[in-house]
Image: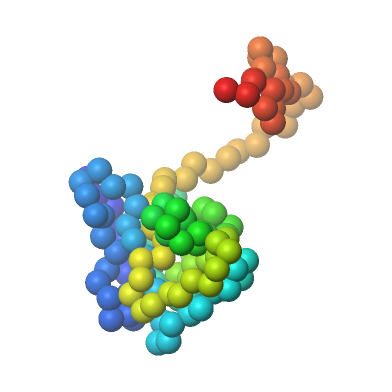
Length: 146
């Protein structure tokens, strides 16, 4: 079953879509009137021209595109970026150039991907102790290098 989500598209580009049957994310495109030149280690906020109305209990995650990361050194900061169900503003993507050279973004470039997720709300149950496990408090590499 597909989840119906309202969307307003104020860009000249097609709506985000799944590239293949097995795709989890839909590409977001840069809705810009002039190229953006990102210097090495520079970041910018890129508009998409898209506005969505998610049903309660869902979020949209903005994630990097692997091709942009490996080919151009461009990735998303604050990744994954969360779009809450009550947000109605334009979807914008925070990009950073981690390469050693300037990178150019053009109108319509696929800059990130959007993944929708169901969210479970937490009802905290405050206790004095937690159940022990084999791992317990071990973290940050405590299970070995492999």
